[in-house]
Length: 368
Image (cartoon, rainbow, N blue to C red; front, side, top):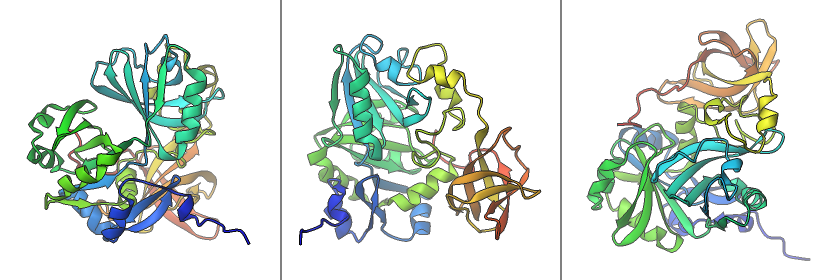
């Protein structure tokens, strides 16, 4: 009988897989990768990130390096947002679409030089995205998928700046929101940006794959830092109403439905523009707070006060900040106004909630 590989054997490992195991992390498959779900309780990890500083292994994310004039090489037509006016050392969030106007992925563009770009994409979409870029860039572009050469560590929390300054990075003070720079941590060259995914002040460290353990150890040598897993990261991003690919975003979802309107430059040509311009969304993304501690779950139906089904939950969790369940989902257009009562669950069991404005968590240190 042939040996059948285990699910774990089919997953990619980050450079820190054995380190996570040694620290007692509970490991799970995520986006094709073997990743730490949690080290301690979700609540304790949430509390530490919101009040102090945490480090996340995000080496599963994809990094594409592109050299060439953005317009001449075809890069500008792949992404929905304006990038030609980006100053060097800034980054910009956006998306890339298929011809039908569906979201292939959301991404962040980094402008490293006049004709030097880095595109950061979601882990589960690396291969698909690389094919898309190669198909639509032309001979004037130099494209490299550096995803398995580039590690990524996220240092997030109100004290994250202090932690990096303690490593000798005094110039980190100069990084404003959605900018980046070139630094060295104990002699290791790193690109460090300040974007964040938790609602707190935070930095992303891109370093050589083989140097990741060294950087991880140097940061964790600071007693204020704790390793944190994907479990609490999801709670933190839902509290901020940030979308996650595979939940609020996929190739069947329009950027207009997903609330990405402001990340679309309607004055330029991009793949999917014609389809998007013809769209009249019948549903739009919305946010709601449970009337109790009961948490909505992805796949739950959403009902109006009269019991009519009006949508579906895409993400839900318990919010320690609000001491209540919170959810994100698509609802029939027009979008329900904040304060309107809705229900989530199924026909047999419904829980009350109220539509809210984003974000749920309004007390973070993100832009301090």
